[in-house]
Length: 252
Image (tube, rainbow, N blue to C red; front, side, top):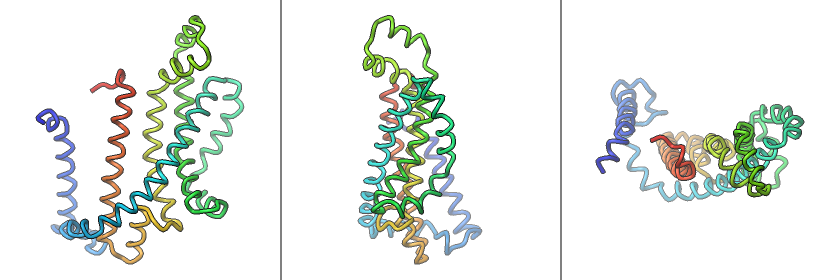
């Protein structure tokens, strides 16, 4: 317990400072609009009242996020590994990767909504695309930067293609790949919020948008706080998994 407190007391101090700053700017100095930025004292009673609604919307958001992000990891790592290992393919497709990845994914929202058969499929596509480009780019970079001696040793040991891929290439490239996956996860959550604000009937972003339309900014703030907590928990779980995979590289 003592080591835990020692390790994370800085996080608690920053949280207290942020809460104190918000209270100072709202209840103290009244710098922020009371209409847009409600007092923190009114938020706790709302949580038990709307927790069921929040959890139902969370299920909807997690469903889209897990499917889209999972597809992005599988497709981007597979494509990135192939492109990284094959210089000929890399030379031919790199200009198109630069061109297509430069298009902001939110700009494709109207096309996705009108082309996809359902809003759910459109949302999954947009989240997938947002994560795909980041993971693809970092996977290519990680594979290309592998020390040639690893591949030469694999050739000397007469490893099969599958053995070389799973025992040499992917382990050596995993730090870079997982770094990209971490960034992509945050972007996926952001794109999830964008997608849920266009025609969705459920989701955490839908909850926020719905009550914003009715000028219930106290519930909007509850939605913001709940979403932030969920994102932090997801990233903590991801970091734990990443730490287990990259246990030999983590410097505590």
